[in-house]
Image (tube, rainbow, N blue to C red; front, side):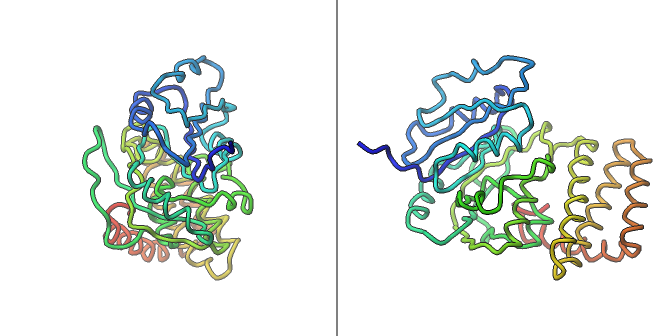
Length: 305
């Protein structure tokens, strides 16, 4: 008898076994036909915790892989390489899926041979998850404004696996924003995207988050990679160069703020000088960029910055 076809591979990078991951594992369906769940445990070898994961709470469709201790982005790439599904979804170890939404989407995936990316809905919660907050009026499809100024929310997007064969995996040089870099890269190449009015993902907001926590120094490290990404994107497209300069001005202003807030005034001054040399009139770009960011926040209460 032939093995059942895997339609969707869910990839989760984790480091150790946290309370949040146990909650996630307990919330996953017992049976998920057409789905495999690849959990990449990225232990650096300083502490043996692999045995902790061999719990009955992991469903039968879960596949545990050992990471190489090189960080979450490398762990996700390892999961991609091992995935057998026609589509990929990325689930962080402290978040949740919406199983009913995934089941609804599976029926759509099975009949669509053209779409590269399916974009559904995400909500954010702190503490215990409550009721899904509902669907936005507009579909959460990709645009430059959303990619640059919004939240990537990879978990609310399902990717055709062939995209990673064509464009390569996530770039490990962007430890904190490899998701945004990948979205920008495939968006520039021209993709077929389809928005679906289906809730897919629940994003946990907590103090330990690398990108949404309250530590100014950690946020500054995250934003500094945005500034570097903006510089790279300016060299990729003449038609989008001005847009990327605006975004770089916006991210530089944020970087200066968080560097000052974290007690790093010298680095803040260096960031301002670097931007002034690269773009002497960057403060004029900043005004336009702030307007874009405010519009995104007003229009997208979920996906805004």
